[in-house]
Amino acid sequence: MNRFIRASVVALSLSALGAIGASAADPVALVDFGKLTPSANCEFVEVNISGPLLKFAATCASKQEPLVAEMLRGLKHVRVNVIGLDDTNRAATTERVTTIRKDLTAQGWTPIVTARGKGTEDVVIFAKMLEDETIDGLVVTVLEAKKQAVLVNIVGQIKADQIASLAEHLNIPELKLAGKAANR
Image 1 (tube, rainbow, N blue to C red):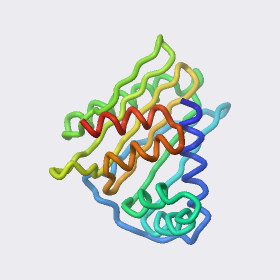
Image 2: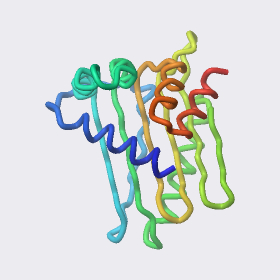
Image 3: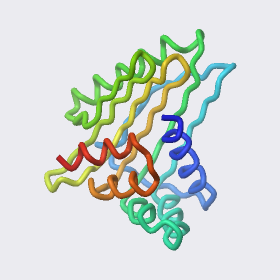
């Protein structure tokens, strides 16, 4: 799981090095995570990348990582939050993640991956599917033991085979599960 989190944060942070621009993301697939409470003693990461930055990142990645570049071209917005947990924010953050999951289900998002470890890891990945089997948005929700919560919202058109190829290329097991589930 940490490999997935690091890969997401690193990839998204690298794309933030370009010029900043404004883009309206699709409001149907853009998810408001609400107020997330960081702990004074733990890490808190928030990455928000809109269309122009994603296009810049696709251009930068096109020669070295063509699979990544192809996927980035179809995206409108990416948000990643990593919230370190301690006694000051664990209950509120866990409740917030639970509420987000319930809200997504009520709004017609499809849970495509649910993985729960032996009390240490709780992952649910949701997809907003279009009729042509294209994914219009993904939301990844992770509660990792008592250490951290991770929320990822990817808005834009993503094909299931792109997820599977990218997961294989980057060797990210959790993303491989999402690709397989979306291909069903």
